[in-house]
Length: 134
Image (cartoon, rainbow, N blue to C red; front, side, top):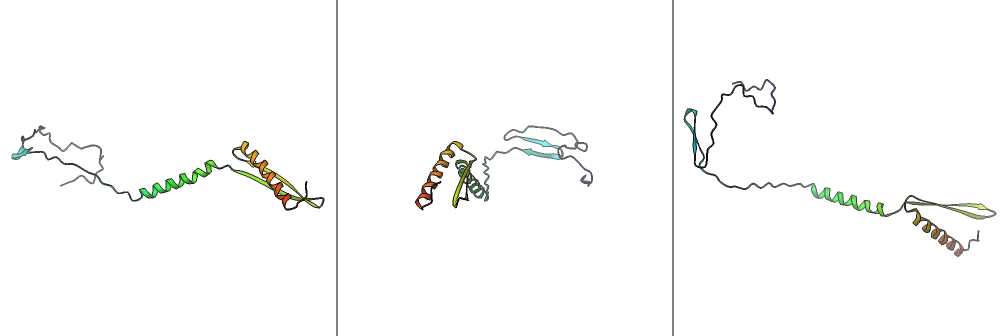
């Protein structure tokens, strides 16, 4: 017969134009109901069962590891401070003259103290190797 495959139909709507109205009946446990053409439907019993769904996702540990590595890589960026220090040496009256500058992107108040310590330590090191004052 014609299955109706040549015409488009909505899968969300049931075409009832070619169906005949039938009888509706509720069958209780142990009951039965007769259908046309001598067919008998019986509800003889109910077997209890459980349904377990098992799934395997082999990519989950890789994704978890990637997420952990991203977070571990992000932690140093959050707790470190970006700063720059420039040192320029230029000759001045026969000796090297140093110009030192610095810039902090974060934690500017703490950088001021670090910068002063850096300049002080550099001055000590230059005096230790015998550089002249100034």
